[in-house]
Length: 91
Image (cartoon, rainbow, N blue to C red):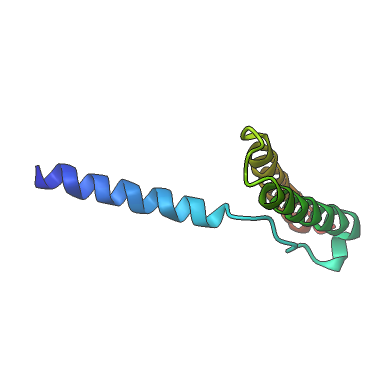
């Protein structure tokens, strides 16, 4: 029983850490990749606008706004990876 509780606690901590890491998109691409950086800026802006819409509608948007925010977070991560690949190839 102790082992189960310990494993459950560890899983809960890991899930919490993943959730914290995937909170909201940020602009973290430098000016070297101007187009990718601009795209990240638009993503951050869109994410903030969705937050405003959720507050204005008391979060009653059928889960669609949250799904859009999740997808924007994923797009932000993909742009960061694209910049990393470009950097690795010396571009």
